[in-house]
Length: 472
Image (tube, rainbow, N blue to C red; front, top):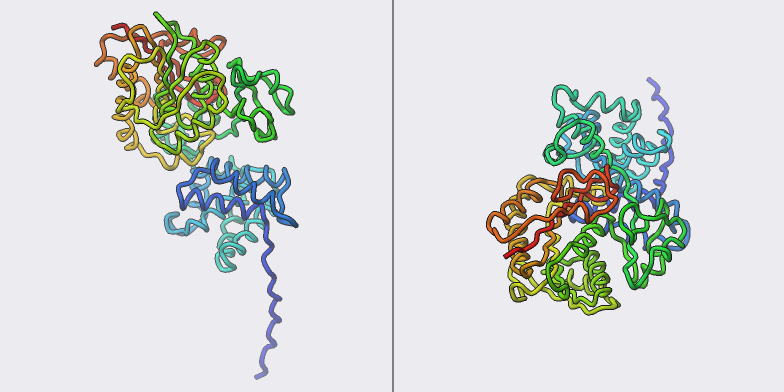
């Protein structure tokens, strides 16, 4: 019996290295392995890639694609997990995290970008060969070919439960938020399907970069002279950079005369600065000042009136960031590392006090999409005593007739109205001020007296603000 001739082996082909997708994969691994934040991990990776010589050097288009791959994948992670789970024969927890990252990047290219399907699959398989090896690249290829058979709408119809059967789970899968976050945001909005759908969709949009012209140091007109700059919506000091605008290219930002600051944060600082007082207006306190954006704006506003700002931050390294943000402020100020729940100042020392308290960060999911997957409902219990303690001590720090601003970048009722209501019960010599007139021109501020901003209504982070005057 004659032997069958062997088929000639295909020559081994080295995997093609794609610097953009390798960088995106490295960023996702850092987010997963080190609990890093993409907005902190990605800039140094991009900077290093731009500094390289040869074919691996990044241009602006490469940087834009890498940024979209990282943030888009993180924002839609919940949706993509549901789709991948439908295409594999094992629970997702049994898929190695690096493999899942490559799959998620591939699914985002297939379902969330305009990259042609064949190119998305091919590029993802090549990435898998480079970072995972040929064996697991075959698994990636098989899964992504299944995903490529339908578009996003078709997949959502398949993997999301019907709205009528389970509204919260439907919204969680379709809009890629944990179910408990959907429930909490829905409660804060006050019901209605349209509002929660609009909010969840806004959380998955890429936010604009907003600059603040620090009074006395820069003007909005100066910033509007920059390419891709347009006026802010609500703050008189805000300037927005349209897509492609780079803050680091703005001279005033490089010099610290302007900064990157969401318009919601600017409005909180402005509301406190413009709140009516009884008596003098000489000493201001930012009791949770890190990383320094609000402190820099408050310091500039205080300087215009000859007032002194004390900026206090518990963590020494964050206090250093505050000092950097305030460096060059035209008026008197001091930065200290101190715990706002154990004050380093005498009671009744200040006319205006801001406490922008630590929180779950559910109001900034556009900017930190990975936070939605890290936070748990039990985190609220950990923040609650700190938030109440900071507000109580802020009320002790302000003099009679002075005003405290309680702010948080979370719309969760347990971090906003519940905190304010609980603390004011214990401080009868206080009154809530109507904060709405102090945000002139801003629509949709509700019944008051406190204010909740929303990404889908105001284009800002979901900042909360309550203004409290001490009356006795």
